[in-house]
Image 1 (cartoon, rainbow, N blue to C red):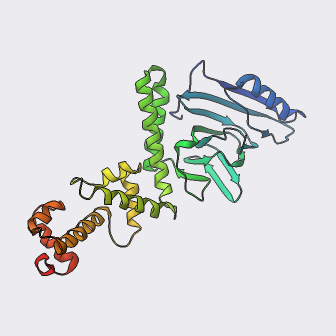
Image 2 (cartoon, rainbow, N blue to C red; image 1 turned 90 degrees about the vertical axis):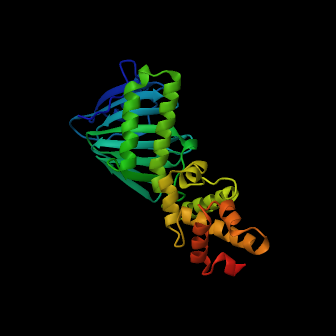
Image 3 (cartoon, rainbow, N blue to C red; image 1 turned 60 degrees about the vertical axis):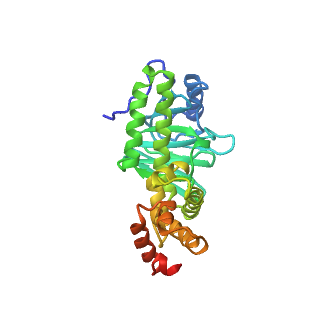
Length: 317
């Protein structure tokens, strides 16, 4: 039994059964979906297969979480389309967390198969075709598209639910859904923001692998470091990551793609280079330069300087 509990007695829902042999099965499905779901649960374009026996069953329950919402979805085999300009939830980033069965998505050259234990994050502004296997249950999370960064060349990202970032996000989302009715405005807003940050952490782990994102992040970090070299003796990776709205792990991974230095190695290199320029052009003492460029003392400065430039500060001067 899944721990997911979405909504309550007054939650918008559809619960539909349509015989596969009915000649008007697609029309009946759409009509009944609209009757039950109304504007709260708009129906995507669906196409039922034709069988001589049995019936198609769909059960959807929706829960609003401020400007986020989640759906507990059960479906028998069906195909359809979603997203695209003017399409179903086009302004949303949609995540399917498959609990049983399988979803298959296709958009252009992008193909994603999302079986049990996987989740798939899609940009729904793109047109998607989908297929659902028989007896498939999933929880769908829908977020405002403006809030999420995607890899430049990707329309969808597939992740194992058991991965640390995904597991943390799903645990937070389950708990928020369970407790949402009892939360005050401030607590609900805090839960919303925490969920968004965890989602960004999940996506940042994927975005960092984008060939265009990592260099851009490193460049932005370097610019920030230049601005703070003098002003902040406590400059550290957490401070830099927070200023750039990424996780510390994402910042480390971006710098890890460079062969030359880590984040703090780069900070020390730049401080030594600035100290060297002032050593040659000013009358500041070695002790003064060590303090000015945030070294613990003059002996640490001299040691780092010699390692970097192959000579002592005195020899340089």
